[in-house]
Image 1 (cartoon, one colour):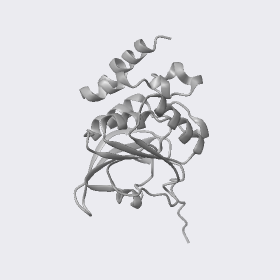
Image 2 (cartoon, one colour):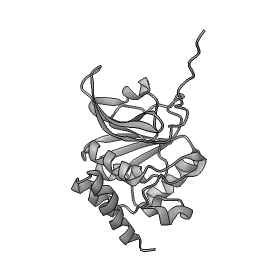
Image 3 (spheres, one colour):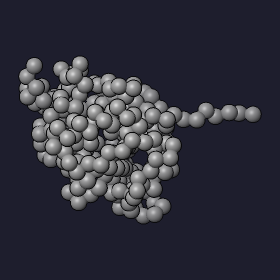
Image 4 (cartoon, one colour):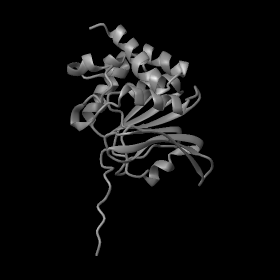
Amino acid sequence: MNFEQARFNMVEQQIRPWEVLDSRVLSLLERIHRENFVPVRYRKLAFADISIPLEFDQFMMRPKIEARMLQALDLREDETVLEIGTGSGFVTACLASLAKRVVSVEIFEELHREAALRLNDNDINNVELFIGDVMSGWQPEQAHDVVVVTGSVAEVPEQFLGWVNPGGKMFVVVGESPAMEARLMTRLDVTQWSVESLFETDLARLVNAEQEPEFEF
């Protein structure tokens, strides 16, 4: 398979038509080889407009969603990023290439281990990886300039808000399948946020972020 041609087609036929025109993001998608982060059996689908399956019923985001997210975040070289859900490590690599440092947490030890190997193989060194459940006790040592949530939530958990520095941003997909909303949330001060609706999508739920059932008595 000609991966270079497939990468070019992905950018020209999926990414650009979805209003991703940021030269930094387009250059990044050409530079970081997505096929290196895809499970071997799905390598030929690395550039398809689909959510590629990972182990433990997890998925990689579709390429155009990753691209729109990176464009919306508009990362600076002096910013630190917290990624919730390492997954394959591809988004981690993209974030690390644009920001100063990335802290990424993954609930599944095997995904964590495989992502660490891929990042090392691709010379991505400004990343700190953790194993933990953000819905049940794990939390970062400090707040970050940017928080990226790679699985959807019914509503943004309160603890996530506290992990964003004042002036910082969060990318998160909120709602119920099949019509969820990708949001860019900017923390204006201690209590105030601005919320920008980016696009509609459908994203696999963050592990253990299922909405609690409501009981009526």
